[in-house]
Amino acid sequence: MKRFHKKGQIPALYAIAELIVSFLVVFIMMRASYGYATGTFHHRVYLANDVALTTTSLGSFPTNIDYYYPLFDFPYDLRFQNSEVQVLGAKGEREIKHAFVTNADSQFDVQFKSPKAIVISQQGGTLSVKDVTGITLNWNKEYCENADFTNIIPFILDPGHGGSDDSGVVDGKNILKESDIVRAIALVVSSHHRDFGYTRDLEADQSKDLDSRQTSIIPNNGFLSLHVGKYDGKENYIKVYYNAKNTQSKISRALGCKILNALIEAYPRQITGTAIIPLDPQYLDAHFNILDNEKAGIVLELGNVEYENNPFIKDAKNTGKVIATVLPSQGVK
Image (cartoon, rainbow, N blue to C red):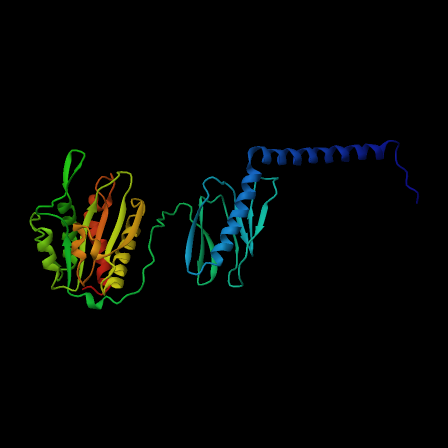
């Protein structure tokens, strides 16, 4: 049957369709222009490329690694799917995609809502990613090798300084003595380890100098010497020093590493850096002469006395407890 249309009906429909299409084109162009003008498009392209490259690089890393990737300057949703990262934009903006290299064991299917940070992890050849927004992390933790600690008994604790080298420092209106700070920590450790030896009387002011403390260490197989540093008040480091040349160097490093990591877990916000430092006895500063022997032992520097919130000074009770709970797990009883 022949169909008839009223005069002008078809042109009117075309006009409406053209108007709708024109609005859509203008809207899309405005969104694209906005993305370019505000930098969001370039930000998302950069982010997609960089995250993909980082993920590929970590996948070929020869050892296990957790990589912290901050995203405070990139307020976008992220999607990881199969071997592709997608950076999502505002409604109406297309996602930016970039592929990365992975393996069959690494399966990705996760989306994060404006994460502040992610951790890209490679463990045992398997890649993964997680959102760590709001989680307090300290990425100064060290890799600790396994070691047999059963032979470092008997064990002695050395709360450092005192006698002619009392290391008094000024903290505001108070004069803090390093020997008093480490004594408070050692007292807590002693409540957990009454069978430990100590290089000084913990119930009295320090009166023994370095030479006499070194003599106290000789009959023992292992030792821990406690100290506090003094430097720029904006930094708060944990440092472990050990004798790199004696036969117990591997055990010494492992012991210091495990104590260091336990303290980081206890105080992640207040520690700004860590170091495990091997020393050669031929070039020791006088303060480190206590390491000049064949014992398994470390000098542990507990942060900075001028750091306002140094937890090792303000919370000696918990600091001592953390150190004490690490030692038994290593076979030091």
